[in-house]
Image 1 (cartoon, one colour):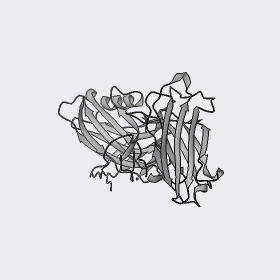
Image 2: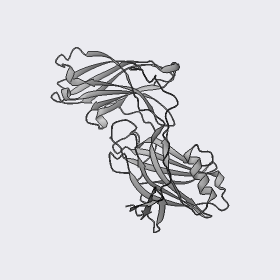
Image 3: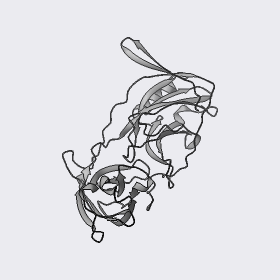
Image 4: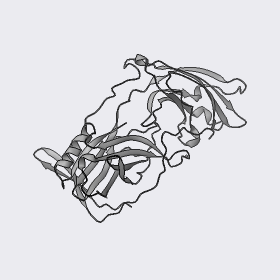
Amino acid sequence: AVVSTQSTGVSTETYVLNESIKTSYVDIVPQNKGLYKSLAQDSDTESQFSFNSEPEQQKRAVLFVPLQASTCGTVVCSIKFYHFANRLAVRVGEVQLSLVDNIVVNPYVKLHLLPEYRRGNRQTTRVKRNSTLLVCDEDFLFGVGSREVRTKSLSLHVFDYKSNTRHLCIGKVNINLGDYDFKDEDKPLSLKRQIIPYRQQQDHFGSLQVAVCVNEENLRIGLIKAEGLVPVDMSGTLEPYCRLLVHVGSELLHKKKTCVAEAINHNPVWEEIFTLDLPPKTLLCDVSITIEVRDHLRNSRSTSYLLMGRVTLSNSAQGHGQTQWEHVCSKRGTTFTEWQPILA
């Protein structure tokens, strides 16, 4: 239940939580590795969480291309349709990037056959390390009927591969298959397209409302809801959940998960509370809370989730994460609830 009150011109939301929680021809290159397990969290206690502050918007410090640029490189590819097999063949030849200040990236290309978004309609090239020239010469097959192929469009997104965090989109190319005639199967259509920069890149991938309370014996963490989540692969599909990690020094003390929110939910509500025991004489300055916001891949075989971003609460955290943790440590037994930006 949500109760809204007015006091001295400031609006406050109070949450009362009941705490009863009732994926081809070529595989996708996994961005992260892990196993998904559904979690049901049951508890008999209730807690109140109050809204404190909104996070500040944070822009990217580094851009791949100047803001006024209309292109960031070119893609050379060819397409051919086999009527007898109902297959669309796509060959990705070369990707040449033109980035600002000679930035070196790890490029790869994701292919989507739109508008449907399922496992057979999304494929990925290999990654080229530390280069702005990606020579792929890779072939991909998409299953599609001869009557449907002209209603489809082929989307190519160029990404910068990151090993430990969210992959960043550099730009994209859209090819409308309805503009081409596929009667001649012996001659593929060769295309060279400009890469359109992806303008919406930023370090802030949404906001997460987190409530934290600590006392002498345990630590209570409430994961209430998120707003404005940005899908990792820009398909529009999203089944988010949170993974909670609590460290004392370098030791992992607790690991928990929330339930998975319903599909295509950019503003999920979990309202789950975790009561975690702390070892005796634990120094709060050594405690670190990491919340990973993940996108659950229900039909994927290579990996079970994609990492969307993280929220960190500790003395060594930056910005809002450090501020909220300082408040928690200064007033034991008091619950502090704040909106935290989800960062890469």
